[in-house]
Structure formats: C-alpha cells, structure tokens
Image 1: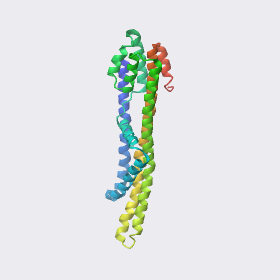
Image 2: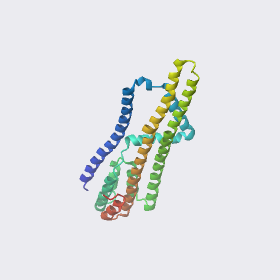
Image 3: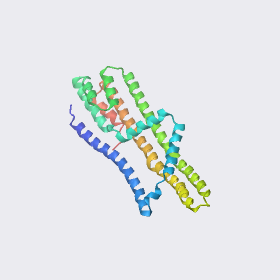
Image 4: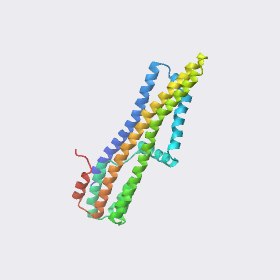
Length: 266
C-alpha cells in the first residue's frame, strides 16, 4: 500500500488547517487592532473604558442566553468553540485518496488491514467506520449508525450557530438598553454639569460595546462554525460512501469514481 501520496496530502492539509485557524486569529487581532489605533489616534484610550457599560452588555447577553437556551445548549456551544479553535478534520480529498488506497490494500490482504488503520487514525468517526467493517456488520447497519452520528454532530453544531447568532442579535440591543440608562442618568443630572459627561459616556459606550461584540465576535464565530459544519458533513458523507464500498469489496476504480462525484469540478 502506497502511503507516500497520502503523507504528502496530510502535510499539505495540516499546513492549510493551520492557515485557516491562523487566519481566524489574525482576523480577530486585526479588527481589534484597527479599533485600538482609531481610539488612540482620536483621543485617550481610557475614555473608551466603562466597567458599567461592559457589565450591562455582557451581563445582559449572558442573562438573555440563560432565558433563551438551556444549560445543555450552552454546553454544546462551548464544544463548538473548541471545534473552531482546534478543528483537525482531514481534508475531503485526502480522505478520498485514503479510502481508495485502502480498497487496494484490502483486496490484497483482506479487510483485516483496516483494523491497523483504525488503530492509527485520530478521527473518531473514521475509526468507528473502519471497525464496523472489520467486525462484519451489515451494510444497512453500518450506514444507519454512521449517518446517525453524523446528524447528531451536525445538530450540535447548528445549536452552537443558533446561540452565537442570537448573541449577535442581543448584543446591540443590550447596548441600546445601556444607552437609554445613560441618557436617563444624564437627564437626571442636568443640574450638576460634572455628572453629565460620565453619564453620556456610558450611554455611548454601551452601544459601542454591543456593536463590536456582535459584528466582530459573535456573528463571525457563527459563520466559522457554519463553514466547519459544512466541511464535516462533506467529509463524513465521503467516509460513509467509501466505507460501504469497502464493505461490499468493490473495485478501487469504482470507489474512486463514486467518491469523486462528491467533489466540485476543478
């Protein structure tokens, strides 16, 4: 079995995955750096810090999350964050090549060769799929088990997307609430000019915080999880189709042609 091409593909994938995560972190750094430079150039950075404004926005968003979602949903969201930061899914083309090569190997040495690969792979889904074939499970049972796990994982990701999108919609609203509170305090302090400035500052900063969190943190994270979920679904569909073909002991050429149908045309 020739793993040289697979090794090269894995190296390329790891580089690509590192760049994907790096681009996400670079995006966060650049966005906040631009705001920081704008604040420093325009005035004093201290003027843009309001503890009460931060508490109103973050506390309000968190309280709204507790009302809208269960603790289980929030826990799934934390899992989604982990997927965003440490996602290590194999590239779909790499998985396709791997399945084709496994088909060649299994025709020469039998399906037991899949057990060695199952021990080495770090993908839990792929590991389970290989072991189901080695154990001699029926094709319908293999398909049902793997599709169920794929759908459950996707549902968890969708829940994380919903939570972040909801947070993105609540953050500006909480900023507006903070603005209204600041305006009320300002109007109540018109007889004392020294209190008008701080009250107005809180009123404006809460809107600022809400807009920044929504458009630079929550909504982009929801979009990132969407992209990861789409990649995972494609990868797992290819895995399921390839595993079922291995179980049927189909020709490697047929497996390759079938799996290529999942990939977009060059």
